[in-house]
Image (tube, rainbow, N blue to C red; front, side, top):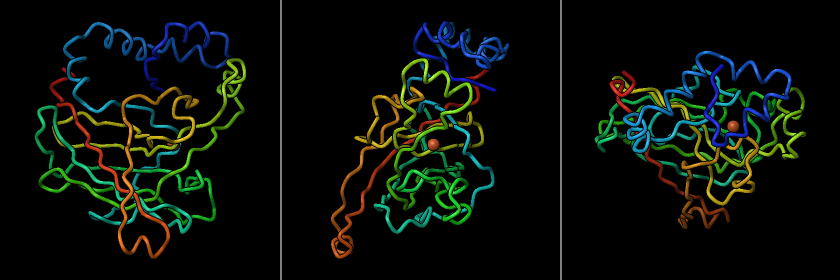
Length: 241
Ligand SMILES: [Fe+2]
């Protein structure tokens, strides 16, 4: 089990009192992550240029439906349409063609397909490939946030800290391309409730700014869709050597 590096030095002291958490901090691989990130300024430089990795969460499912450029990611009659597009680039700004983008998100009610029997399997999940210029594009809905389970060690820790269990609205991504380090991250919806207090402390640089798009069709539906752009930047494999 891998963990992201906490931003505060108090994390270990807090976590050491929670049953089931301390062994994670003693994991040899996680110790190496702490040391490598603290002592490798060259890697830090590339990290500054590359898209920030972030929490995968427990709701990733491999082999999501394969979709084509521009496809709809899922069905949600209550959702506000969102047309999301962007490019996958290297740290020098060059396009990465045929990059695999896996995406998964909750619907407008904050529910993932695998936890909501009313949704078809694979709803709001998909795999896309970038075109020769590194472009990707798909239609989805603006996701809502959701509460994480309040039982077990994580729930006990949140209670001790006096924290709520809310996750701010976000979309998960995994990217991979030949010659580049895989990227797992999440992109948060600008202005979403609890953006500044997400229970996982993971809201940092990946913010999706929505633009309202006033098309004629949208006005007829009384539901203007949103558009947003987000570029992903991948690090070359050489950066890890
Ligand atoms: Fe999530």
